[in-house]
Length: 327
Image (tube, rainbow, N blue to C red; front, side):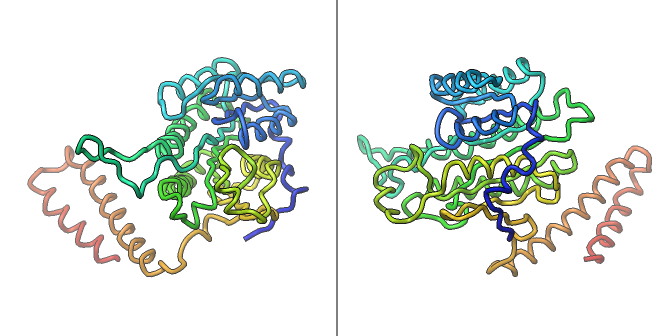
């Protein structure tokens, strides 16, 4: 684990100059702070927020300071609205370079108190899942497409930054759905990192502790009274470093702000093992076996039309037995 001081957060921020940064939930809180910081480094901003007024306000603030920005209303739970946000970004600026999936909400509803109406059990309130997980998945999927659209050889900065939480690591019984979604965001980042690294696309997930945003409700403020909050400026800086770091070996890393102290970087190869080593090792063995059998199946599927059908089944059985014997 690496400790990163505040004066190191902007070590690679020069890479943002002229780049197009798209941020969901950018009208307030962490999203707004990140947008304003990116604009200071000459990035072009696309600010999406379910509250279109705040999105326009942030864009206007950037423009008044001499930057380039557009603000749009965007509900991240709507595929169509997110698609429109990305398409507008591309149509306006000609590319999308950095995507920050920041939109999020706290725990909604009371999962432990099922509600019965007219004798029928109602489904739980799923807004937390829809915004934090489904919305993030939509954003990541769109980013994979738009980051490559009209990409030039010199476009070396392409990044997807997801917003996790310390709840990604330590669940809270006061927020079961919030914990589930933020754990899912961490898993999504880990799953995307290796395949997208082959396309020279950085993936990272930033995990802040509580900061002073609208998500910090009064009951939470009372619960953590006396505990230092994470400065919102540091979170914005962490997002910028996670997006711009020139070292591609840090892709897939988790960037943690567990308290009021400095940023911590946990490399992707450290996010494994622990008390589940035995399960990790067993599933890895099964995964290797499945991968080898898949290679064999793909090979014979390709050769099927070129080899006598009478010969193929026997040959396939032999190949499978050989593949299994190698494990």
